[in-house]
Image 1 (cartoon, rainbow, N blue to C red):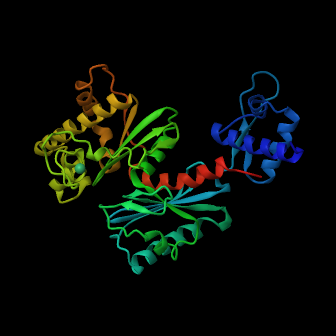
Image 2 (image 1 turned 60 degrees about the vertical axis):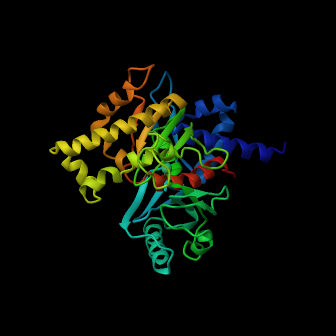
Image 3 (image 1 turned 180 degrees about the vertical axis):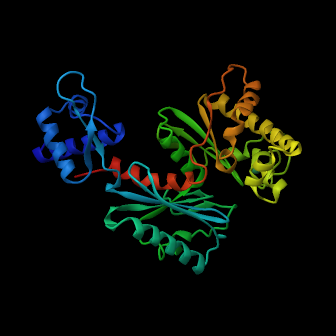
Length: 371
Ligand SMILES: [Zn+2]
């Protein structure tokens, strides 16, 4: 192979290794990639000159000189994530380390109109211009939608939560001046939680918002199924001939565990529900009922996948105060275990779907990084 090609390939592998390990020494890089120390040093210098890595202190010495710590420069590139829901628009700007550089969340009802798209464009451009001086550092814009999408990430194949026309992508092209793609909201949120929690094994993400969705992660990769509709946990039947679901069928998990089931008691305000629950036994009973139904779903998921389960979405944001009660309910259905620590509350209370949509571009940059 041509010498330059080998050298570039080594540099690219070193960059990916530093990114994966977050911090690593020159000696460790040389050992793991089987590259001589002088060559490793030369390649590290090239990456430093490109502004992609930097030295960040020293590791504790194991005898002799302390080895330098090499890290990726987080703000070498950025990605934007947008989460469009029925009544809210969230925009986040993240760097390569998934640090939240800037974010905004506004209440605005979705509609396919020039005024909505113009508002989106205005807020997006504001966030970009306030934080990024060199626009070439922006990798792209991931947009999370409550919809099932085609494999091209441009076509909407199923949407009931918000009305989306099939050519929504081409309508948006006029308003977003960067590469952009669509992602399913629950899958994006699952991806963000899995990356943030640094899960290396399988993990299930269950999103408990005004509708229920989920994601099935293996390491940092999504399992999306044969038809791109894996993890539609909201339509698992948990009560035969039970309450009517918005899908038209009966007894789906969504009819029992969407956030509306709780917020309907406090005029649509979920925050108020969790505030009042502390002094209102009636509401506490409603929530106990809710957790009983949720426990059936979580136990089914545990039986199917035998992996950790993250409770996210609007209800997941409040569940940490009740997690021990909930774990007990789930364990009562579990024939094998008496430790419920596999059930976790989510990390991100509101931004998970937007962060997850941005991850596509971050991951793409690192995986396809080429000199
Ligand atoms: Zn249903």
